[in-house]
Length: 220
Image (cartoon, rainbow, N blue to C red; front, side, top):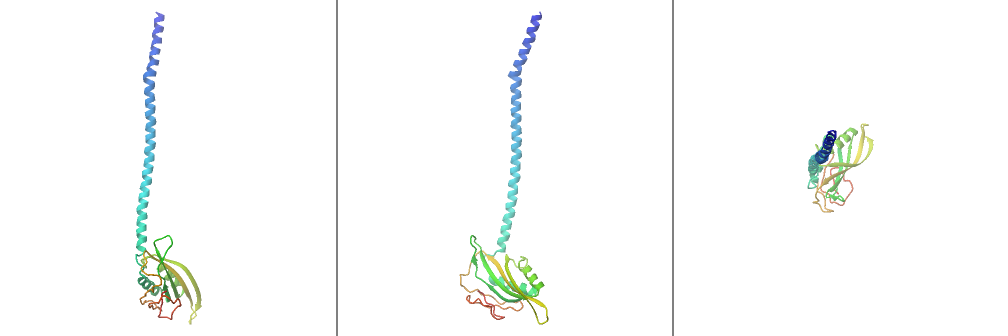
């Protein structure tokens, strides 16, 4: 009887071990494998969400970049429009109380490695210090001139007028830009008469770089 009990217990143990190896252990392995797959899928989902956020950020930046390019293109006219630019500079000079002694725009020149053309403008102006500062601030403000303007150089000297006030004579180099060149090299640049104080423009012959007398501006 005791032997039968022992055999029964042994059989039950063998049955339990067999049940474990053939049913429980494989199920646990499948559960562990599915759990690993779930964790890998969650990790992949987090990575994809991060990539999506990055792409959305790039898309938003691209929209802003395209808007900035469009705005910049608006500030760089298709044609040189030199006469309009000269008139605008004259008008700002009048507002700032600056005397324009001379103004000489050059023909548009292609910028190396770019499709843009650069227009170099040299100006000689005369005014007091605060008027000069006001003039420089206004010409680079796109609210005053609806195109991109860059001041590249300044050379100044001071003197006292007949009343003893200090005034400045300033030579300014300005760069404006255009997307096409409608003027051939050596072609004279026609300028219309300005309305600024102490100025006057007339058609230059494109060969004389000297500063003319007051009332006869010449373009080179």
